[in-house]
Image 1 (cartoon, rainbow over the protein chains, first blue to last red):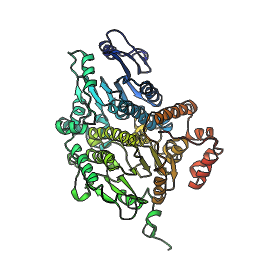
Image 2: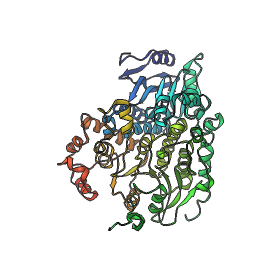
Image 3: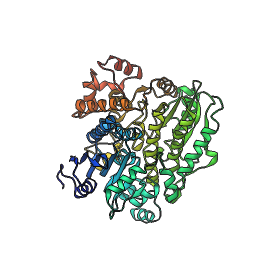
Image 4: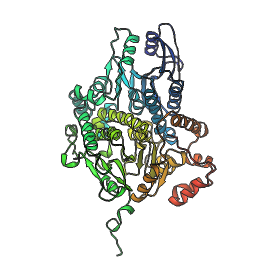
Length: 251
Length: 310
């Protein structure tokens, strides 16, 4: 087990690659916060390390750091590094309103981004379910390193819920990306925009993501292009056409 | 026998929200005959993925979106049908709400209402559902920042769980009834992962006081607690429109303070009744049995008003 205040080897390598001149990023209880010099300015960092589950305290702490960056202004980009478990599954977390804490963290990231702090997610390990939505999926651009393995739910759990045999699900997972865990499938839905090249300098790749971040949400268009979500983009566009086409009536 | 067909003789506004279908909720919630659906069931936009699992499909994929009037004001509405696949988010189900939210920027409705009734992500389309939830949350932030209130109504059979709970937490204002449950991990999920000692999902009283409408209202997770009738939800939705907070740094800083204070104050509580006692409720054990009227009186009598920056 890694020490709670020591970054995992993978995280330490990422931080060393991003900040060759050193940084002020710390890890406590699997939660990553801090910043470091990056290009002409600084890069703020939050994250979850070592497959840690995200509970109410963690979400609250990370959201507070994001709001600190937003309050300070200046357009400092925010990098969200993720190797997490799912949301922490406990009676206490739900009693105290985990849905509010997770949504608050996502909202903090969305607000910071809207106020000129580009948010970049970098998935370097696992992530799942509510923790994934509240962190990586709440960024403007989500990238992954090879070997990352996001999932909504693992196949044995899917088998339990859908009451289908695991062997059948495993066979289906090879031919269809829409329900199967794994990075390739999340790339195909458009949720993960790009997989980075570990042979190239990480800092330059992150800088390019910040510079080229799309201003609107392009994930459903990517999902259509890549075949992982064949209909989502067109359905959303059709609803928009029907809603906007008749707007003059009755206003 | 004095058997009475209650449902048949009840006026639409007096019907149970919990028992009603998503379409019946919309019909009663909006001004009479004003609902117009986008991509209605006649267009048969059904899930392309469920046949792989040999599961039946629905012509509307369990999500109904459209426009209507609420007391004469133009609103956009989305309603989940909890009786189809537990109201879960699949590719089409989610994309319809994404499209509705994106349309709000141009349509500029008085409000956008989401009638939640969902167990979360549809596992047969998990990646599409999960991504749609992220798109919906981003679109809600954009919609709210443009000054359009996004209001959530929670009182359906399936509750509001999983990613649905995160979407609800992104709304500007939430209305909830006794039957509405709001949470991320559901009781069965916690029990499956952690055992019955952690959460006995068959203990309905425990489920209700941990995730139910009264608890959520008392801790500030919901803004209004209403009777389980379509009329009560309609009145609360109308009242919410002028008061819903916008999406800005001040709102989120107030929410940060609210959530930090909750952790500091109740972080060691073992049960909802302990939290209610600390909030100043004299007889916490009596709360689950209170009528809506008595519960409102209780809320008014508490030393501090719940505040709901969100």
